[in-house]
Image (cartoon, rainbow, N blue to C red):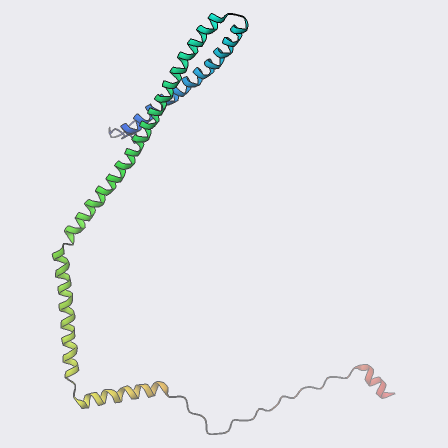
Length: 201
């Protein structure tokens, strides 16, 4: 059915990802080329050796010149591979740095919003109000403490002692003696039948 609402699906692949992929593909092609050149160099060395055995020195010399040119190509290829790998690593590291910077930016914006909600003046105002409430409660406590007379203080202490005594009271010990325990009668075991027969005889 396709996209129902006509909105194009956003790809997660970035331009940097595409660039890295292309660089890696190019590096792999160069490595294949390098492998092919190395195999050709080994083959040409063997052919030159055979030509020398056959007495064809000029032909062997020409082949070794060709081999030397291929070795120079191999060195250039190695340098190109190193450059590509360095470029890939640089892009990947820059991507990581960009994510870190993006994270710092989001964190900074979040902190700024929190600072707008809780400004220094707001914090000072809340602390002042809290201190005022503590001072007010202290004044109430002092007024209450100062409004009691000596009689009130004595009555409070007396009530406190009474509550303490109630908590410490133990049950009374009975004055009457406890009844003695009567031992239960143990039934006598029936004698064995054989013992009765011996007694009868």
